[in-house]
Length: 314
Image (cartoon, rainbow, N blue to C red; front, side, top):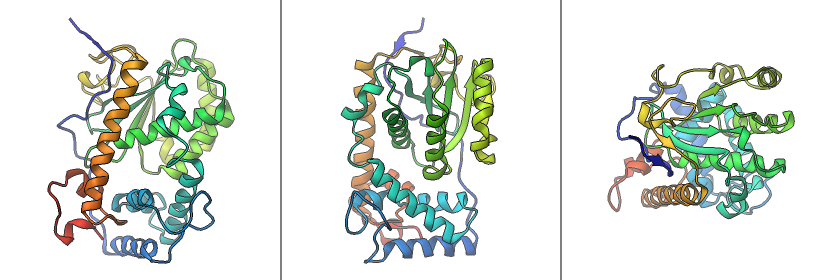
């Protein structure tokens, strides 16, 4: 007999390896150059509003070693393009309000129906981000976009050491309400420009004719690499993408009899993410509190301090 589950799952203890290949000497030099660029004492984010002076602590934390490599891979190892994109994202994160406006209290009205849920992890340890358009409960597009970004950030909070991407699981059953084309394009633009190398798979089920047309309309706005990650009407358990105990039973064929109850799920998600992020930030400060510190280092750090070689990976 299965019992109802109302809260998010913690990351599994075992997962498949997703490590990237070793850097070439040229690639290593590019990362060192990026590190040097953003480490200048006089550095400020070009044209950014909503902040003054140099990089904030949150921004330095975001500019990790792995973050720099994600942008280098996304720009096909073109140094100048990579720096431009990193600076564009730093500017966007300030102006979008990620460090100020978009708080749990502000965004909660979007969450009450469970239209976007973080629950479980695939066999590579990537968090599963469920989207259920039929549960749409608001009409204000701006905060809907902000909610999607907020949940993306919480996905990142749920990524264990060695995990850098997430899976989108989208269910169009129950007369789903499609977002407008303009809203979809804005979300796609944010994903592609400011969250490069973060999408593992996009798994879509119960795709009716009109929704299929909708995807055909937005596909030209998606880069070819992302399009290859789209999978329609796939069985995530039988095809080996998820273990049964990491997937919702309803619609997705897992063994977890999950039911969304906002008063149980939402506070627990916030508590888990805030606890993990606080621990990582504390570790990051102990490791030097500068840009370029490895995500692996601050996620696995034990103790009060470490040798200089553990503080940054450059």
